[in-house]
Length: 109
Image 1 (cartoon, rainbow, N blue to C red):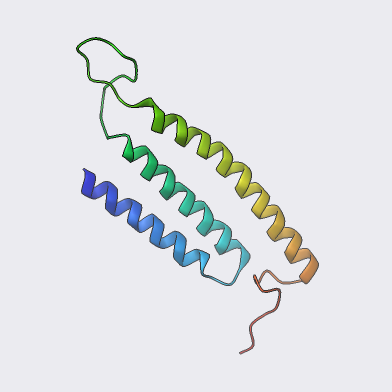
Image 2 (image 1 turned 180 degrees about the vertical axis):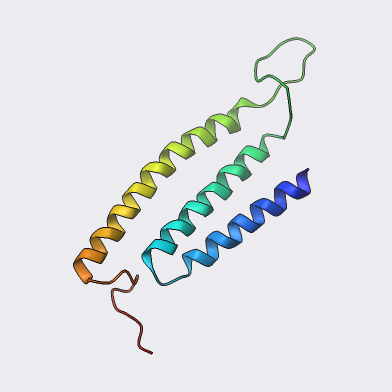
């Protein structure tokens, strides 16, 4: 299960980096979002993967670490706000320059 999780995180990270290196605004925003998801899953996986164990302390019962869950929930909220801000900046840049290329100019062919 750990190998599958690591492979999935690696693929999402690779796709996010590939999209971030594109020259258009929308793929950059999508790449940032994918990279954020990969980081969130990585943090969540660092709390040890366990199925059916409670995050509440009881004697004699194994527990799940609630700290990674709290960190990921906070990161999701901050990620939504950051994504909205980046989308607004991309739209404003497109409106001001007339193109969605990140340099503000269309590449010469």
